[in-house]
Length: 371
Image 1 (cartoon, rainbow, N blue to C red):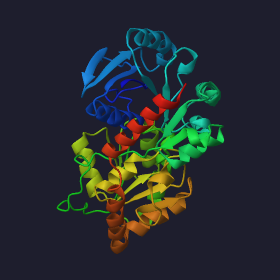
Image 2: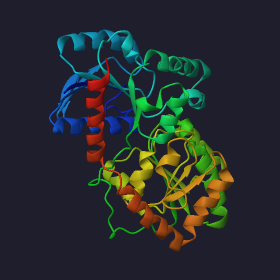
Image 3: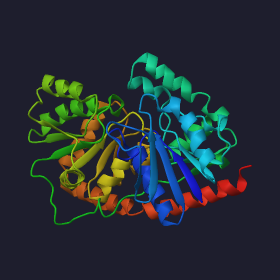
């Protein structure tokens, strides 16, 4: 196959996240299976306009502010000059509505849709723009096949009108070499809670800081690490200071992969308190290195955590319940070790090679069935 993929960012983009990890893990393996893959995405400061990374040809145009506006012009040109068999359109922000201007068999990949969640993150005007841009998605993509990464997202888009038979679910994999369990690495001496990811308002890290304040009342020696970069960081630092936690909450910012993995291995529990996710890849990464997790019981996250087995879920926004789950893990070593053992077993079931094979099969089905 000759595959054209479309996404807002590529993995080298400073704004890349889980959606980019998911797509490019699959694309690189499709190259390994013998397919020709081109990824079209937005540019960023000092980027190369074109390059090949691990066999995937990457074409960058525009920037994160205008990419959806300039994409149709460039896409028509790219498609005209190449005989692509299929388009993989990754919708994790504003849809590109390619059926309006491209005559190409298409698989629509949706990590998750924002819906009203977007208003938790940005101002009303821009939020309304994104919200309204999502609304006609199912109409313009009618007849297309959809691929999602969790049962929650499948239920979401089915409720919006996509026939369930047109939706396939393929879970994310895990990079086993990078996120490998190492029995020789022990936990930190102090009970340590870890958040690792982008620092965005909808991630609800403010809930974790408030819950940690409660944890400290019972467990004074506990500490919290909030690892990552993002525009909501200053507000979190002010909150920690106002709660008297300035010296108890560490904000190291963006860290190298080796540092990230070490922190994951050594933390006693990793937390993802987000309002909504497509899957919760960080949960599986933590499980894969032997760390249990606590996450909000919301779409996506409830798919990546087995409540009471690989970690705990709590009702989103219930800060007392979050603190309760954290204390349960931090004060009961036997329970924590049992959760870690089951978490490792759960993580073993996720594999990028298997995911890519399933994804390839779906692409062939689209080629055979779409008119």
